[in-house]
Amino acid sequence: MLSVTTENGIDLPKTCKRSLRSLCKKIYCGENIDQNRAVDLIFCAEDTIKRLNRDYRKKDGVTDVLSFRFEDIDYLGEIYVCVKRADEQRKEYGLTQEEELQRLFVHGLIHLLGFDHETEEERMIMERCEKKYIDFEKE
Image 1 (cartoon, helix red, strand yellow):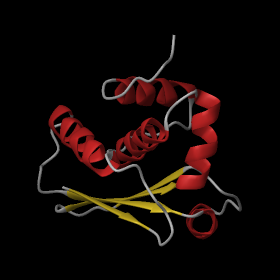
Image 2 (tube, one colour):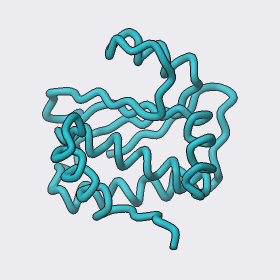
Image 3 (cartoon, one colour):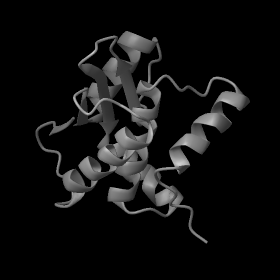
Image 4 (cartoon, helix red, strand yellow):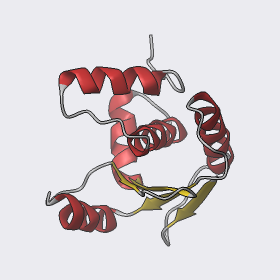
């Protein structure tokens, strides 16, 4: 189901992989995804995500998360998360590192399911789907 890897030199909280796998199971069940369809989650550095963003999206800059959907019956796709960018964003949102990594994972996985946010309507639909699985809004 979920394979989690990190580039050299990237450390994650000890509970992070376990919580991400649990979250993945919850989404697979909620969205009726075949449990045998694999997804790779790669935590990477800024240079990696910038290169991927430039090569595949023709955007020359660092982003927080990229998803690459595969049209394969056994393989859903790849999600790349920039850990440094996530750490910067978590401070803006008032989240822990683990919460922000979970938020970005859910966002990436929802993209793999075919959701997007190019229009305001698409963004609202995608956000509703994401909030079924995580909602870290602080009161």
